[in-house]
Length: 310
Length: 246
Image (tube, rainbow over all chains, first blue to last red; front, side, top):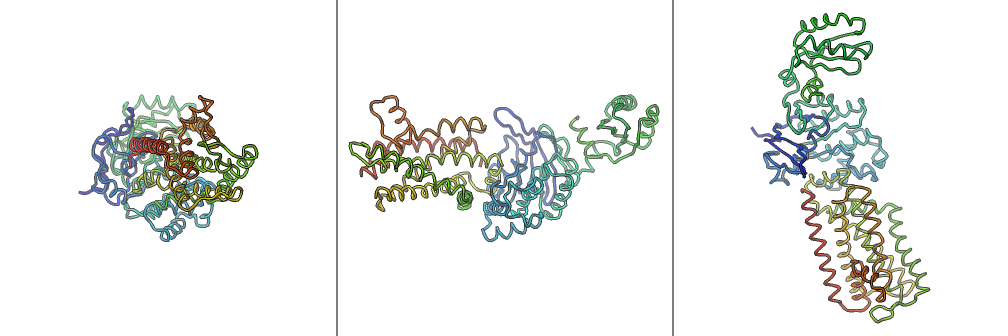
């Protein structure tokens, strides 16, 4: 099978000895959406930089559209568009002018560039702001303006690095919907450390930490393969007893179980409803502290915490 | 390449930037030059007395190419910081094409300034260039713009911290004052003369004067300028190859 992107045991070492990627392997099929998920410094941006031929791998094979990234850079570059996480629009240019230059830099003629910029600004909801200086836009507007690059430079492979960084949750939902609607029939790779974004956008997820792949595949499949199906969430009236309840739960279950507390909520990964009942009865001494409890499907966040041991 | 030229010129077209480019030669030639001429009507240069204003004009146009280094440095650095450079490279453009676009944009501004400078000098002293000399001047100014732009790009690839940038600007910006841009080499001051001889601006300004004012090609000056350009070009190419994977 021919893949749009394939990594085979890829290492990236930045001089003098910073290892950004350690034997990373994964592949992406045509029109797949892959979310590369990991904490800061995990190697997400490096992965996108290698695919977009901005930097080369130190070891291993990387192919994009079947072409070697170290040899066929020009062919690869003509088929992809990268949208960096930093706002790369010229801050002192009017928005439309900045995007127009980016379009023309990608080989689009002046007349066509104007047309495409207008249409992209309409898609991202910034029509009417085209004459504003980029630096005068709000963070959310800048982020949407930046995403307009992907719609203007319409290429089969789109690389988005932290596409909703700094955007409020409502804005994020709008952007996710926009991306899903406008980038249909494209192969899209998204680097993020936002778990909700990963769940909303990724058909597949590549979890990386310290440059290593720790899980790769369909979100639901890897959650099911890696751990049980359920999470018992216990909400407390006060966070004062959180540690003593976690200690009590740890006495009751095997040490491999994932238990973590966040503000006033404790989450524990379990395999069955019976196990949940057993644990709740063990906490009978704390019944006046427990506000509520419930069972959730095991989430990507649970998996993420388990895999990176945080 | 045209898109990069246009992008760099776009900001230069804005009224404050354009005004700065127009005012700078007016201040140097129309104000400084005129006031200095009141005290020093002529200057002894290569055994010939030359009106100071005419002597100065070649220094000022050379210095206008010198300042391209800071402009290139600042804009290339900004493009790295904002990751605009990712788009440049991943869009299939070579860094050299991007850089050449910047040089041409800078050169256009240098030509604009030179035009104003020579217009002022013509109005004040009646001095003007023949077409041939104007072409020679334009060609040399292009070479000088390349030279100083190379310095700017080397600095942009090595100097990342703002603090070091300020230090470098503080050290480099007085360079025109330690050259023959505004005065001749004082032979009775060996230390100052050595400093002046160690400055590329000295050779650049003097080459312009020897060809246009004195009417001969000084082979020694040509050789020094060529060697300087070759050395800086090699350093630039090696730096780009080492620092940028394109």
